Length: 181
Image (cartoon, rainbow, N blue to C red; front, side, top):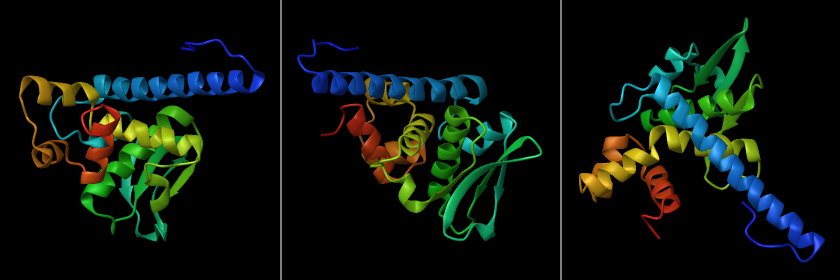
């Protein structure tokens, strides 16, 4: 992972951090792909609530979340994802996928997420990982490649509809894959 020799301790620290970041991103992508391979029916758009339930995780709407858009918590040893019912349907899909990311990557911890934590730029590594997990779950990289390379679907609107995501999520994913500047 580290392609060059560090000439100073500071440089070594940055190279190590970059290597760890690549490793975390790969681990996050693999966790989402694992969930897809085990619980996804292969149809688009990916339904994160169906995947969560197939994995034994309850998905509920909770109007008492206050300013939070979603959370994952454990009740009686069972994982439960709660989403705020006033959140748009597309956003609820992302919230559920994001909370699944916390479940897969961060074990038994309880997370309550407000709108800002679902933004692409995050300082908290766990929130970044959950966002990347959600993007891979909802917009699987291999599906993007098939739709663009093989099926020649270049319309952003058509891709957004097929994946059932917001413009923001699709643009972010396509930039990460190198399809958009």
